[in-house]
Length: 262
Image 1: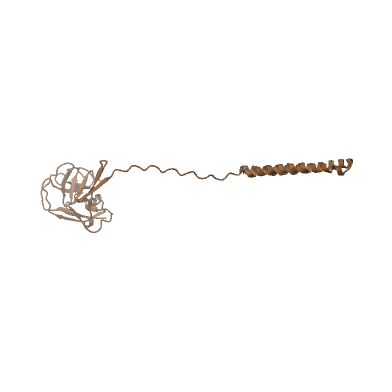
Image 2: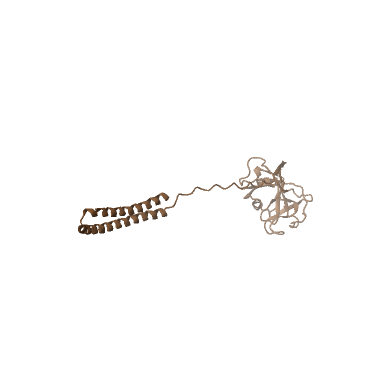
């Protein structure tokens, strides 16, 4: 832009100089004319020359001024991008943890004192149930909550049929274990399966099982401790956080397996 502005200023000076030179040439012509004719012709020529030169000069100055204004409005070239910032500090390394696997249990112990234990129960045969979970496999030697109850659970001595069958089920109510379900008209096997995450019951088998204390026989009902269907004490119906009362083996019609479906 500096070179362009210099060119504009030189242009203005050239215009002004041309006007002066033209005036000097007019003065040189005085020796070729008589005083009267020179006076008349000179005055006429100077008047016209002065008018034309001034108009031309004004037009050129305006044009140069317009170019100058345009150059002043035109933004300069974009500057170079700044340097990239420095990389942040690396975070502190987390506490290390140790994983120990033993007999179906995984224990995770970390340097900060935290720990966790995970129970692994792999399927016995074939694939897991269609729900994608282990079904009754998760209830083997473990308590599975019967959803909707105030705290009744089912446990299986073993599981078969890819987790769809619970063998020799045992019931816990609150903190009391040892409930053995038996055949009874009040039993709702579909409800029992649904409480355990299945859709319905497909088969139930019966046979003799020990009812010696602390075990006790149960039947299905929807009263006493709660109104939702659950397993009740075969003697007086009540056993939430209480001992079981019925211990007679009877005809050996205790439930030995429950099979559910999805």
